[in-house]
Image (tube, rainbow, N blue to C red; front, top):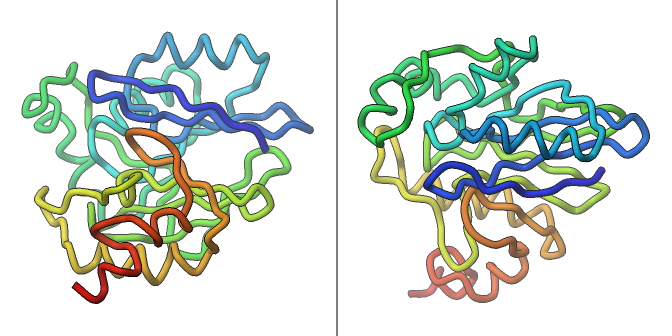
Length: 215
């Protein structure tokens, strides 16, 4: 599997374009906006876009998903169904955060902990990681030692939990019980900002690193 990160929207949200090298089939993880930029990236690499994958229901991560799905006839997979209220409230989110109007939509497939997503010959494991939102998921590609974590974890920080139905205790539990066991060598792509590794964050993250347990 190969990938490239394309920051989109004024929030510089990391939309990830992933693809199977054998089949050239591709998926977009969290297409929040800037549709022309995303389609150009796909065309430049001569890929076939086969699906859209959503980690959670905040507008900066899903703002272009409904439009792309309708325009190209693509399925949308994810998030977990507890984020349905966020997708239903997309028009209100757009108004609140100053995004172009987006109609509410529902995914083709809700995702649950333990599910798998197939992109060409590549398989991604789904982990339900509530906290930032109740239906947040993380995607893990075991062979590449790579995780797409949305807004659960960042370099030197963690996701906000002051949005509707956010839960700080759930977020910390998700990171420590779902992400850390995957291994210190796993590189992760967050929803915003630079990549890091689980090992680095365990050593130095002030909110959820191993030393934070004893503060």
